Length: 289
Image (tube, rainbow, N blue to C red; front, side, top):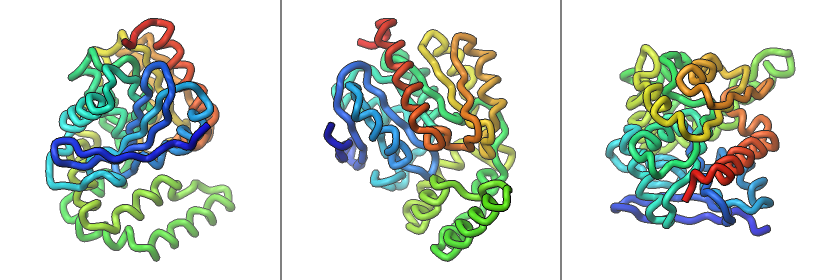
């Protein structure tokens, strides 16, 4: 099968980048977390290209190769961008697969545009509780603009990687994930840092997550919904996944043993299988048009 292809499009004056695997069935639209990019989904797209599915991984505004402009990075604005992107693709609906911030955007999209969403896969999703890691809360504080360049410096990243590997070899926790390294490398660019902080501060403050999507998930409880979490997530607690079942009792929660905040990268084979199962459920239920 051909490798996932890369594309770019200009919508309303702003450029968006995305990767795509062509196939049939409901569109699977992958949304990454804050500071990340569509690169986080590459192991999944590589596996999906062996299947007859249509999958797209989008660089959200201000992230990856997409334009980093001064503007609105709220969940509502991101959801509108997703709608406009679906219009560009000529797709009426999509199954939204959202990681962390992307999960919050997916729920916001399902709330704002209920006829455009045929299913949800929420991966260590934001918006399901107030708790968030101290790292994210600290990054949202005034003055973070002055510290981020030093934290993202190549020498700092190398030191963090060495400390993380040493800790892991000694049986301790891994201090920095592969995705976190990608985020830090991206923050070397001033425009990327500005977009990162604008996005982060729209959903996080010093007390934790400031935006709740619980009611929005309840409004979408008729949709096939899958929650995927790592049992060692240090960023957003696994308890948030259990709470989500209280408002969406027909949803399924799958816990990936040993995974931290990127369960899709910890076990990409299992994760891909789970996404394909939900896509099959959507297809069988006739949810998508």
